Figure 1 (cartoon, rainbow, N blue to C red):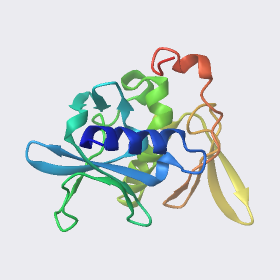
Figure 2: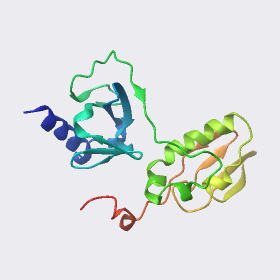
Figure 3: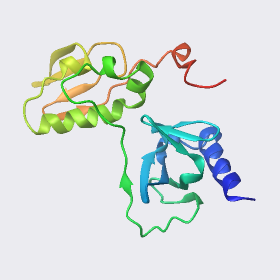
Length: 185
C-alpha cells in the first residue's frame, strides 16, 4: 500500500468511524519547509488535498494524523516526533469587526471555540465589550454572582461569561441545508 493510500485511509477512518471524534485529531503537514499542526475539524478536504483558512494545501504535504490526547499516530509519513511543530490557526480579522460580516455562517460555527478563546484572552487583558461580536448579552444574578449570557441564536447562544472566564454554551445547530454548498454530496 502506497503512502498516499495510507494517508487517505487514515483520513477516512477519522471522518467515518463512529467511534472516533474528529475533534481529537490533528493533521501535521509540511508548509514552506516547516511542520505545521492544525486541528482536523478546522480543515475542509477535497480530492486533491485540503483547504485551511483561504489556502489550498496539496494532500501529499500531509505528514501525520495524530490523536491529540494519546499521541497515537494513525499515519506517520516521515514526521520526526522531536521536530518542533508550529500550531496554525485561521487568520482572525482585526478587531473590532462583526464576525458575521467577515465569516460565513458555517465558518462561525466551525471556529466558535477559537473565537471564544480569543475573546476570553481579551477579557483577561482588560475591559472588553463582547456584545458586538457575540450578539445580545443578558445580565443575570445567580447565587450572588453577576453572569452574562448570550441570548442571540447562533454559534454563541447560551455562552456564559463569569468575571474573566467564558463557558461555551450549547448553540443551536447549523441547519444542514446551509452546508449544502460546502459539504459535497
